[in-house]
Length: 336
Ligand code: ACO
Image 1: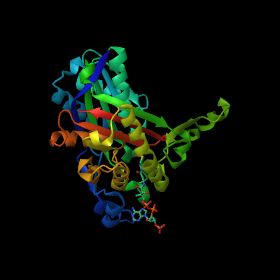
Image 2 (image 1 turned 90 degrees about the vertical axis):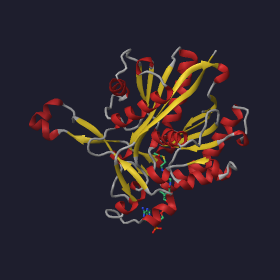
Image 3 (image 1 turned 120 degrees about the vertical axis):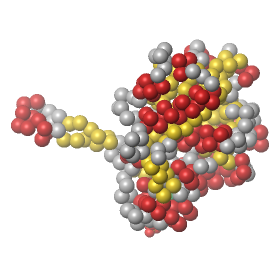
């Protein structure tokens, strides 16, 4: 049987930076409140010439370069996003941007902040059982496009960005993905969602609308709605259990793990989970202060920073966990 290893990572972030002081200019908040409750100081937001596809392609190029893999040798691209720039999917646009000539299969995975790890596990299954050899897994989101910028309880949390890894087939002894634990709970959707809402079309159709026999309507998406306290509770309760389950399936304990890498939602969530798992703070990866919550991008974005700064080294074991809308949560033990 085949294994799969992580060979490269990359990231792409928008150039526009918005600080807590900037936010305080249009909502009733301040740097002290945001820093103390979330650990977030800055976030990047897509504007001007930046696009989600552009950032995702930049992240993918970084991963391919580090892995020394040619775009033409990629046979699968998984784009993990809940905010695609095309409702029908955006992965094929990344394939085009990278100029992959062999027309690799590419498709989107929608699972909010758990998206990247679900993509990673899916990629591993494609490699182990499906004959694929070089898979790009990209986490990219532009939550800023769905945030209610007048709601101070949620707009302070989010930022945009993209991160990517290249996963390659290898001998089973070199396998880079160990145990994983994946879940969802549709009941929890009430705590975190951005559902559809109807948009009237009558005006455009004029008086002919009565001839159609039903009220023609399109839909658009509502802004993100969140019960912060409930999401906080869910994360702190569920993530340690899920990581324990992934460790157990890997026949490892937290003392074997070099790094804890959680979805970067809030420094207080990261700290609470680390405390429950008895992880010392110097073994916890965090860059939430600079980017806020970038949804599916947050784990590969933080991984890329940690790898390029030399903190994460070849052979290190990482306990990773994503959690968020759905609700969904996903944990995996990874070897870099
Ligand atoms: N600035 C100043 N005051 C504020 C702000 C703000 N930005 N936002 C809320 N407040 C006020 C509230 O109005 C409230 O005032 P009141 O006591 O007079 O009513 C007070 O601060 C306390 O508000 P709480 O909501 O109780 O604050 P809490 O300590 O719960 O922190 C927070 C809120 C930061 C949102 C926290 O609940 C949290 O981080 N939850 C997790 C959210 C999360 O991670 N979501 C995304 C995960 S999934 C995904 O990524 C899609």
